[in-house]
Amino acid sequence: MSQKKIFLVIVAISTVSLLLHHGGHFSWTMEALHLGCPSLRTHPSFSLKPKHTNVAFLKTHKTASTTMQNLLFRFAERHNLTVALPVQACGHQFCYPRTFSAHLVHPHTLPPNVVTSHMRFNLAEMQRLMPNDTIYVTILREPGSMFESLFSYYNQYCQSFKRVPNGSLEAFLDEPWRYYRPDENDSMYARNTLTFDLGGDKDHPEADVAAYARDFVAKTERVFSLVMIAEYFDESLILLRHLLSWDLEDMLYVKLNMRTSGSKHSLSLGLPAKIRAWNHLDARLYDHFNTSLWRQLAALGPACVARELRLLRRAQEKLVRGCFGGGLPQLRSAAQIKNKELRPWQPSAKVDIVGYDLPTNTNATRPGSLAHELCLKLIMPEVQYTRVLLRSQSLRYRRSYPLRSPQPQQPIRSVLSRRQHVGMQQMHRQAPPLGPGPASSPTATPRPPGTQSRATWVGLRSSGPQRKTP
Image 1 (tube, rainbow, N blue to C red):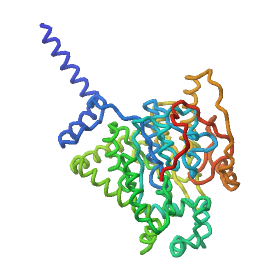
Image 2 (image 1 turned 30 degrees about the vertical axis):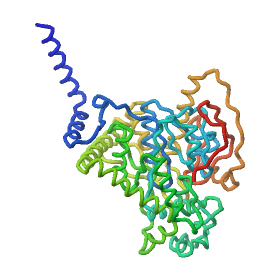
Image 3 (image 1 turned 180 degrees about the vertical axis):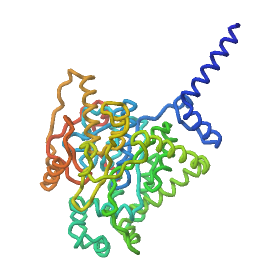
Image 4 (image 1 turned 45 degrees about the vertical axis):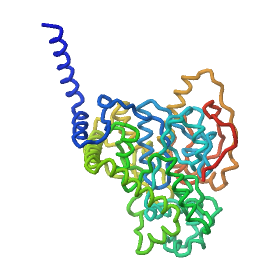
């Protein structure tokens, strides 16, 4: 047989083998190409463009951001990336509501590829911390449903909510200035929370608030390459996938940090309008970026978007079947979940946050297996996952720098009130320890006492004065 024929036979065998091994990926790619979807990536074999791995996700409050954070945590672990995590004194968020500083990052998580924990955004400090090619992403939610969620979730922490008789949202919105104190601890949960998280002025004077809102929206658009919308989470993931050139498998998720229906309150007629008026800066942000999202989806093409949604949901169903033997397991209260690593933190006795437990009758429940690890992380709450991730990254850090001397510690008790210390002690009683790792804090206000490691990484390039974004 001639060398040419032998070569052709080898090529044919290799091609058949590839299609058999990656049949699912190939079919997804062909479906997408048939519809003319631009530069889709469903498997490394079919794309020349590498994945973008330097990502800063601003985790906003009550916007499905915990679900997105879990997706990013899992992506980082699969690709051996470094996630910037808070120093132990900050718990699982960067000492929020304090304005973010690169010195709040744990030294064992430097230099980072990904950052996704709660913070009050500070562009100058983020640019000191992250690589120059970092892509910035965040997420917003419709103001009415978001404010109802904030009012319910933080009712026992935010004094502006706590002093309202009978915990009535209607009473608060009838006379918000009767209960709201702009300079009070946790007031950021009671007005324009998105604006505050983005580094803006939640209480900008009414005299020129329209101009401020316009400028702030424009500034946000210049910084963030994609602003996701919680109500259209899957559609937002499609845009993110194209932006980052990620695999379809990188976008899979399970909804986390949800309340029971009994913890939710329907909005009576007229309340949504009052919420928008009270949170007018947030409303401007949402309206602008909701329109922007659909403009980007239209540019991608309705047929392409519909096909990608179908592929995403099909892959999601396959993952759920593999982990849970069918559909998602029944949502359970924290007290009903046997595995302590899967119990979500409870903000108060008035709010029930539910989670999942791994079933006992599937292959994914065998401890130590890769499937068990994948399925466990898929449904792991934020506090526990942050602690597990810091522990694994600290081990990697110590192996890489075995002779490095310990970083100096400095106290940051000055940023913590006595009430916050008490709240953190209550939090520690609820969240079980997972071995060596940082102290954890609730998603709400309480932050732990302790010490703060000051990062000395050379990548913190600027040594000038800290600047705050508007």
